[in-house]
Image 1 (cartoon, rainbow, N blue to C red):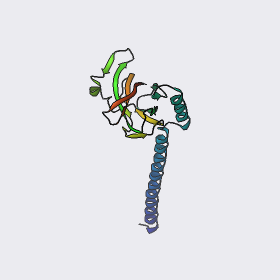
Image 2 (image 1 turned 30 degrees about the vertical axis):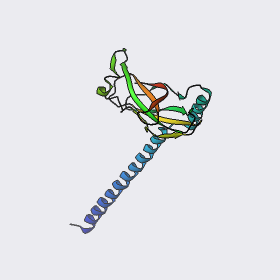
Image 3 (image 1 turned 90 degrees about the vertical axis):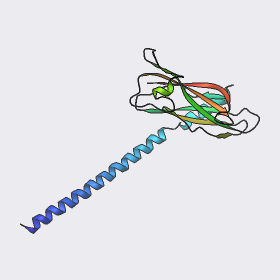
Image 4 (image 1 turned 90 degrees about the horizontal axis):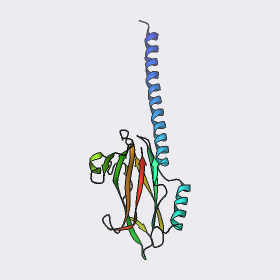
Length: 185
């Protein structure tokens, strides 16, 4: 056999392997870049934060929601904004509590209610927020991001979540009124 032909074949194989490794590295870098863009998209924009602060300042309510309802497709996600104003006469720690209240399919038939939410894989899976504590100074405001993540296998319908703010601890006294957030799939 010709030594040059073997050498050429080996060089081709080595270059092919190096090319594939560089190609795979490029794909991983692009994937990480797009993932970071998705993470940035999972937060309220500065304009939404300003709008929520304005609503909170002009509202008699201690707790306000920027959007009470959002349409989110199966397998996708979005973010809700909740504003909290400390009207107490002292600085206080606040906690957020989110639970599924009810879910209805498109024909208004019950998928689950507050008694059965644990059984239909909605409770504590779809809505995510850091529970706290959030220290809010007297007469100050806080804007919270609540992430809504709809699973790919989610049934089509309306899913209603109760958002409560508690003062002092996760089981403390409810502060303000319960806000209802609707996810329409």
